Length: 330
Image (cartoon, rainbow, N blue to C red; front, side, top):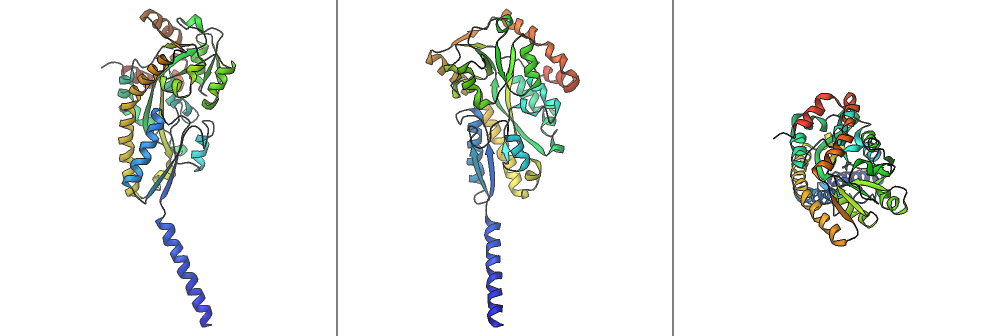
């Protein structure tokens, strides 16, 4: 009997020690993304990890998985909702199945420049979109810039008629499909990780990306021309699983919220410089001609694509489109 009591006591102590050990284990946050570490998103993920582990030592461990090494862009949202990852930063085009309003960011030629994007994203209307999917267990933490998109192709694109019949890679976005149909091109949905091979083999003839993506994914090696169109936005929403985030200890969540604000400011500050640097690297490689549109040529592209706004007005909301357009006025 005495031996059994000692044995039971030893088991209880062991279980107690295990419980204490588990209680002391850091919270693991898996941050998965699909782009290279060199890009604005890649650098943001690294900075988030650095600051979180510095300021919450022993409480938080951040694991970063770049370049679709854990989940590709077709699977990362499902992984977040299942709790297999805790933070992702999909492009804004990925949210149309969760709220149609975020399609506003895909409308072609809506924003004149990144300053207008900032004004809209920081406005009440823009901030409300971050919380618009919480009923689906998705919480937006912030907007991360990648930049304005350029058209790339294997032939020069100076006017909308030049795009006729070409196959352009698009994200899974109804707005982006209609954007290319508006210039009589053929949109082809394709995951980001497959774009280089698709361009190389001719499965698609062109794509739309900021310079940082064109350079980091080596698309300039397989595209003879880039038209500096600045026709659309490729930004990301940093998101987390709502239940996970709300379930964090209050002190941890509060500190992570502060870190997100700090990292977001740094990512957005560096994004333009990185794109301009990568533009120069593409020029230096001398594999691709960058075409600068005249104001008249750019107006033709805008006129050809702007009817897409009206086509999606019912889904997005006329007031939201008006608020975004108003951000162009200083």
